Structure formats: C-alpha cells, structure tokens
Image 1: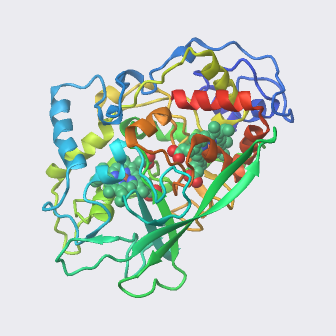
Image 2 (image 1 turned 30 degrees about the vertical axis):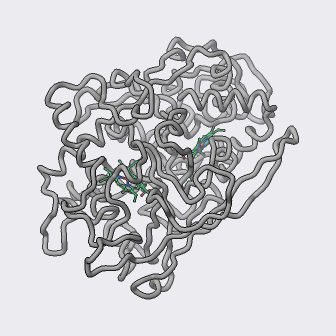
Image 3 (image 1 turned 90 degrees about the vertical axis):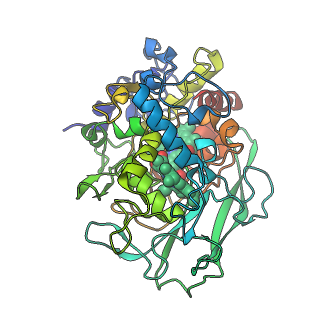
Length: 473
Ligand code: HEC
Ligand code: HEC
C-alpha cells in the first residue's frame, strides 16, 4: 500500500534539510530517518542539502528571471512566435474592461486584472494595514460564493434559486438588473503569544451582504468569501499528472502523521466526466479552461462555450475566449531569489522541520502539457493540490463537490515573496484575513495545527529565518 511517506520521498529533492525535527521526519520527509515525538528544535542527523537546493527555477525551464512589479504578467520563457501572438491577444482580454464585450448585466469587476492585482492576489477592506474598521468592498478582490444544502447530479453545489452561485455586487448602469447586494467586511481582533513571549495580533472577518436586492437568501443558504489568488504557473499545475497527485493522498491517514490530504473530484463540463479538481480555494475546477470560463460568467457576467446563456448562446465564442485561456495558462513563475543566502537556507530547514512540506509539496515533474514548453518540467510549486481539514477557525461551512466545510486546497507558495510588490498589498488565506505570511501561518489549524504549534514554539531567529525563506520564493 503506497503510504504518504513513501510517495513523498520522491518529491523531496529541492530542500533536503540539514536539520530535521523528529515529528516532521515522521510525516513529511520520506528520506529522513528518526521517529516522531521530538520537540521543535530537536535535531537529528540528516542528509546534506541536495544540489537541487540551489535551483532557483521554480517553474523549470519556463521560469522568468525578470524582476519588478510586472513580473507576474510575463509569458513562459521558452515559447515560440505563435505563442507570443496568442499571449498578446489574451493579455488584452485579461487586462482590459469587458464593457461592450458582454459584461453584466450584473458582475463583480470589469476585468480579470481588477481582482487579480498585477496578476497576483486581490485585496479586502482595510488591505494589509492595522485599521480594523473594515467596511464595504472598495476594490473587487473578494467575492462571495453561495449555495443551498444538497448537491447536483455531478456532486456540484446547488445554486441559490434567486441569486445563483455567487453574489454580484455591481450592475451595468442603465441595465434592468440591480447590484444583488453590497458585500461588507467587519474585522475583530484576535491576540496570542509566541512561545518566547512575543505577542501577536490577528484579525477575523465577518462578511455580510447588505441590501439584498431580490429579497432574502433561501433558507439554509451557505456563503463563502473568496479572495482572488495569484494566477501564475497555472499551466504547470494543470500538467502535474493526476496519478501523481492522487498517489500522495492519504485520506485515512494510514501513516498516522495527522495529515490526510485528499483529492477533490469535480465535474469537467467540456469532457462531461468526473475529473480531479485543481483550481480555486477548494479545488472546485478541473482545468484552466473551465476556471477561466467560469470566471467570465460568474465574475464578469460574460457567457461562453462552457457556461452559455439559457438559450445556448454565447457572448465570447471559443475562438475569442481561447487566447484568454492560453494567456492564463502561460503566465510564468518568477525565479526564487536568495537561494544561497544562509538565513533563507536555514529557513528552509525550519520549513522542513515544522512539517510545512507535508502539504506545501516542494517538487513535482509535469507530464504532457497543452503548452509544450510546460511538459516534463521539474517545478517547485509548494502545493500538493489536495484538500486538508484546516480546523474550525478557517472553516466556511460550505461544501464544494467532495470538499467539506472545513477543507481547503493547499495554495501554491511560489512567488510569495513578490506578491506585495506585484499587487501593492499582501493579504493571504481564502478570505484575505492574514496581513502577512506570519499571520497566515498562525491561522493554520486542524491538520495544520501541529505545524502552527512548531512555528509558535520557535525562537524568534528561527521564525525570522523561515519567513526569509518564504520571502525568497
Ligand atoms: C471578482 C474578482 C475576480 C475576477 C474579476 C476574476 N477572478 Fe479569478 N479568481 C477570483 C477568486 C475569488 C478565485 C478563487 C475562486 C474559488 O475559490 O472558487 C479566483 C481564481 C482564479 C484562478 C485559479 C487560481 C488558483 O490558484 O486556483 C484563475 C486561473 C483565475 N481566477 C483566472 C481568472 C480570469 C482569467 C479572470 C477573467 C476572465 C478572472 N479570474 C476574473 C476572483 C476573481
Ligand atoms: C495540513 C496541510 C498544511 C500544512 C502542514 C501547512 N499548510 Fe500552509 N496552508 C494549507 C492550506 C490548506 C492553506 C489555505 C488555508 C485557507 O486559505 O483557509 C494554507 C495557507 C498557507 C499560506 C497562505 C498562502 C496564500 O496564498 O494565501 C502560507 C504562507 C502557508 N500556508 C505557509 C505554511 C507554512 C510556513 C507551514 C509550516 C509552518 C504550513 N503552511 C503548513 C495547508 C497546510
């Protein structure tokens, strides 16, 4: 029986650590020996860093080595002429307003870029600042998914009969439809203390829908606030073979490491079959095509082939949507920086030691890919693409296909250190509650609780090293 540990040993090539904490050795690092139960900071002998440690190419040969605020908007490095023309056409659609190209009547934003700031993440009221007053959405980076109890024929969430699967908080001026509601976020402070006595402050959101235009939500309605995540490296994540992702799952926690990642199985509308979910905070979409066309309809009110109007008509034909889909797949991952910096390297040991890599899988090799330059690449996305129970604090209580109300897909961490520069703001986690990488770690619960506790127990120097490592990605 393939255990999680066995399947992980092949993926652990980038960051073979010098120091391994006992607990983590038992859960994430297949190659390491040593049993469980060690407290944070307990070292055991371990292999020296592999040569791949120094490998900054997070996206394999497609990695871009450029820097600056535009770095998430660049094409994969090794594409051809056809690719660059299609990319340029797609860029226009991603960055520009879809007003006049089918936008609305109700929608959340006029363009993809309005939510995916600089092709990175979105923002929330209050951004990443200390002000906790919150308020209505100013920038459209957060949306509210909606469903009623039960599931459709393919296991999909059931739409609210009036409002559909998502609240659209804007409407085209002069159109018959009104904005469905105003989305408002209120923050409450939560405080805690690190093991060394340093206090920390977190904020917890309450998201409300004010002025519902079409009357109250259906009884039993479930809502889920979702922050726009970065859109780099999508084609690479799509090209990680299904069987590799599924082999790393450990739904019954057979290896007793407290971590039981499992795949989401969702509906592929194009192929009309069940497929492995990969995209979205609960891995509810199987591929970039469906994710993109779903965003066109849900976020912008634009119909296309996979999500047509009730009469079957579309506002963007497949020929028109194709460059946008291509563009979204082809956005490159920037290189990791400071990979030889001793502090960042020590931070990688902390990452390993705290068990972060049990979910934030460091390395995959892609299989065949629609964009041929993305095939057979050794990539370092820091996600296992699996669902994990993250505990009650992060729960939204709204299932999506097989993902429960407490489960979330491990988000990729590549590009993490660039996100503030790219988007002008850094808010993390599915609802944007974390204002820093540190805060994001401190919210980990459920299967991530042990890793959080190891982080809290670290002396400041080790915490800083871990953050330096994450900032190098
Ligand atoms: C209203 C804000 C908003 C707009 C506009 C928007 N997105 Fe998104 N995007 C999101 C959110 C929120 C998610 C996460 C969805 C979920 O969890 O189901 C997401 C997820 C994605 C993902 C998957 C990322 C991942 O890591 O899984 C891709 C790709 C994407 N969007 C592309 C697009 C494209 C292309 C457009 C334009 C057609 C677009 N988005 C427009 C908010 C937005
Ligand atoms: C049990 C699996 C698991 C473990 C172990 C784990 N994470 Fe996570 N991590 C997740 C999931 C799932 C999320 C998303 C949770 C959410 O949004 O509600 C996440 C979110 C994050 C984020 C925010 C990313 C973003 O784009 O919003 C960071 C940063 C992060 N983790 C770092 C770490 C570090 C560092 C460790 C080790 C101390 C760690 N994680 C351990 C599963 C895990």
